[in-house]
Image 1 (tube, rainbow, N blue to C red):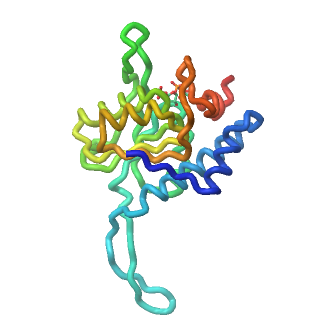
Image 2: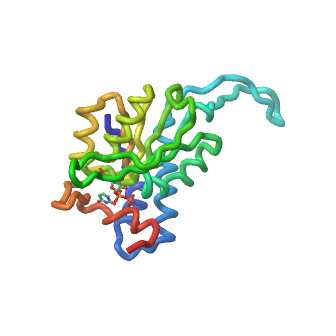
Image 3: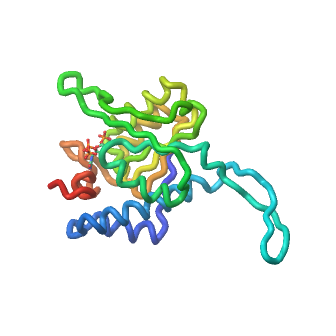
Length: 207
Ligand code: PRP
Ligand code: URA
């Protein structure tokens, strides 16, 4: 299910990312800020422990998120651009990493790096990738997590294409997708239009 978060501050920041004149430093900062905002929305109704806290004025109710229950899983490389923003929201969340490449003969995504917390199947996992285009990378990551027994899978992306959203919704309707923009379409090369171009290149200055 898609949760599209498009309030005015989000649209403002998304517009800065789209601007081809935006440089690497600003692109990275804004991507992190948007990740923070999306995560904030994703946790709107998150479970929390109820207790009490003593303020200088007296005792009152407290609410605590158990950060240990969450794993952020960036898809290398562009997904790394969302990590700092999310860790500023939940500094004690666990971090996994997944690297995928596309086999040119089978066109299937193959994992070439995978390191996650040992008990990931018991955690709530957020896959991170700024771009959900065809959905191929996200589907591959979800499949790997499902095989490992992970039940609570979510995705945080900045830009989503209708094609990618449909692909995930039909294969894995239980996965929640949090996005800051639902764009028009994919072009013939699988790039999101209008999108931002190559997110990895924009984040790391590799073009
Ligand atoms: C980009 C992006 C996603 C993928 C999205 O990564 O970060 O992982 O493409 O496309 P899809 O939905 O069609 O799979 P890319 O392969 O360009 O690698 P990079 O992160 O190293 O730039
Ligand atoms: N990957 C990107 O970096 N950008 C797109 O538009 C699609 C996939």
